[in-house]
Amino acid sequence: MRLREVGARAVLVELGDVDEVWAWQAALVAARDEGRLPTLDEIVPGARTVLLDGLESPAVVAAELATWEVARGESPAAGPLVEIPTVYDGQDLPWVAEQWGLDVDGAVAEHSGTDLRAAFCGFAPGFAYLVGLPPPRRLPRRATPRPRVPAGAVAVAGEYTAIYPTPSPGGWHLIGRTDAVLWDPGRPRPALIAPGDRVRFVPVGP
Image (cartoon, rainbow, N blue to C red):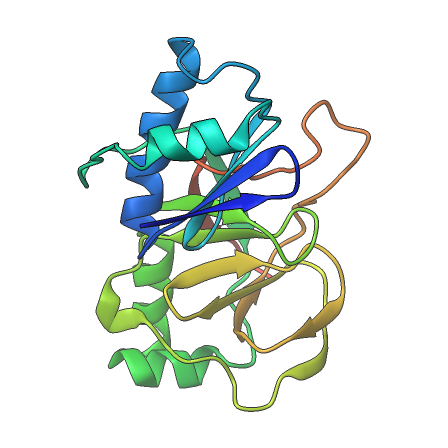
């Protein structure tokens, strides 16, 4: 674990993996709720970091956090379940199934039958990085990214599953698509999927 002051009002906690991020996030949320982190505006999880923003004295907070011992195993309270109707017809699905040692139907069953959870958001508004697939299902990103991936594309890469909220370049493997709107500034909660939410992909016909 490393601590860095970021700007005038933030501290970045650098960690090793998502399990450490969740453990620290849970500890920080508890400390905030108990009033032990005053003036804290926001706790933002990342792939290997947790950002504390809105601090009056980042140096004081960093010195305090340096004394903490946070054990793995804890995680923030789970958010609501978000179901994503998905047509599994992505152009990379046969290749993904082959890499997983399954046929296409088996790969669809595995992906849709796994309870996933949003670890953090990034890359684009509404783009949530979902974890939960077992390590044997992790695949490297494409050697050559596509110049344009359509909005609603369901994809996998590394330890993550994600949905592209808008058309954009992308190097993930496309396994399906959804009509779900991932980002809508007009909604009370613009992001359909927020960190901590549980996510399940539901197969539907084309």
